[in-house]
Length: 225
Image (cartoon, rainbow, N blue to C red):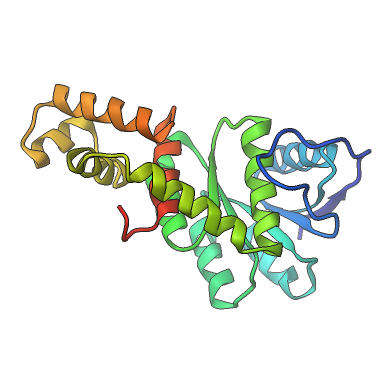
């Protein structure tokens, strides 16, 4: 089992859109790439987070009974048990650990599946320090107080309420990972019209990327979408 603890001189976290991270919490990083594991641990350590790293889903599960409370960052694509399978196993074992999924650009549909299964957030590669620390801080705050997630859900629902019925139709298809051409065919409109609806809904939601729009849609709750 590859497991390590990064101890670095704490610094003030970047703007994470939330309260300070609980000092007693630990961020558990599960990734089969050694360089990624250690760079993540070093980055989070520089912001004052305690971290432990694991080279596979199996090694993390082997250590689960004795780990410190906190959250877990899981790479979605790993040999053996993948990130989604690990998430489901953690849910089955009622671990209570908030899950953050790390996904590549082509894996947004997998991240959607993970959030529908209860992941608190996902970060898309290449991610910024701000995206990473914001997701981790939100996960650790949720660990202490579920009201944080409820507030995020209410905010997302309020933004979603700004959309027209047709914009909602387009957003549902975007969440399902469909291209503009496929959306146009399914809705009986032109690809250009889809582009217009897509641009309008992105502006109303305050999103700059597909990943952000998907996050807002999922945080609002399936019933509202």
